[in-house]
Image (tube, rainbow, N blue to C red; front, side, top):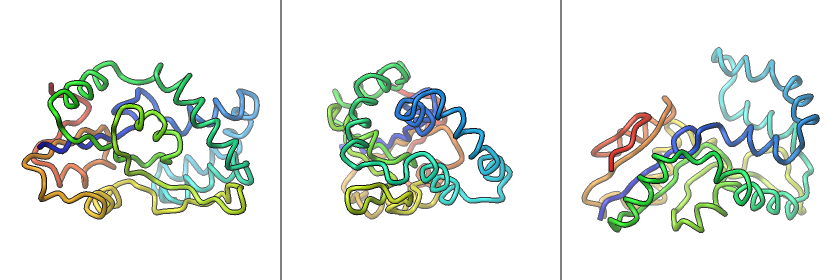
Length: 196
């Protein structure tokens, strides 16, 4: 059996779902105002002065801290129902269908929180290895519940959660430098393209 590893944002989707989910959940006005507040932190991250873990926590804390957990999960399901299908890349979905038909094991490995990936991935029969959020007393704390699943952490989580020696061949798909460590675990890797 082959193991197929997919990055999510920009690989399966045509945009970053952190921003898409936030806009969907908070509404245009609050999203635009909030984005103006977090923008300096995003710039500092872009130039390498703040790491991705702290940047993501700052962003999520600003928009979602103390958000009710049940309502958050409802929004995640609604996002997967109404928004996500419209931003799935056609070539990515064709590759997913082809690999499923071939009987391959499919796994999404993403820096995005698992909450708004799992409802869609579960329907598609795809395992998810992803960043986790921290909830306490039914509210979102504003913190990540795991390390940000990007770069080296992608490789670490893959090795923790999968028995790689059980697969005769491993293929990885990605679209950014954060996928290089995952690529090193694969026999084949594809950057911004799919092979069917």
